[in-house]
Length: 183
Image (cartoon, rainbow, N blue to C red; front, top):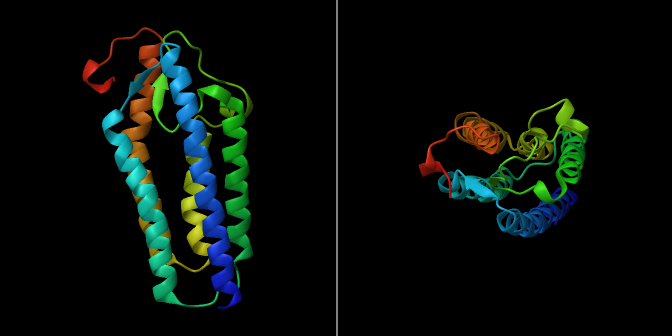
């Protein structure tokens, strides 16, 4: 086994462990929000997002095995992007604290968080995920996974997730919403 294979295994395993830890934290925060009157929006699209993230790691692994090439010489650039994305992820999660979860859940009357990165970027976690889905495959020259999941993530975010979050925030501020979207 060569250095590229070892690096791939280490990096992917670390990111999977990070995701599993995030899911655990997200579940804890979700329960906290539910117990404090939170309402979930977009329940039906959540499994699609989970499936996309699982498919990303599967695609990454398959393309890595099939490609079986050394890392591109310019691999440090996507490493910097990946690390930048990870720092955005951690900063955004810390800023949201117990309000951060992988689901769309809001408590009526809660104010929108406008500290930290949220002053500059309305959805910093989504920026972090986009950077990860783009940069991680590029570190290893996995262009198909890079393009496919960058596009898929963009479509899901722009067409489904961000509009759902806007609707949830409007509901939290007392505006009418389609009750079929609330759980």
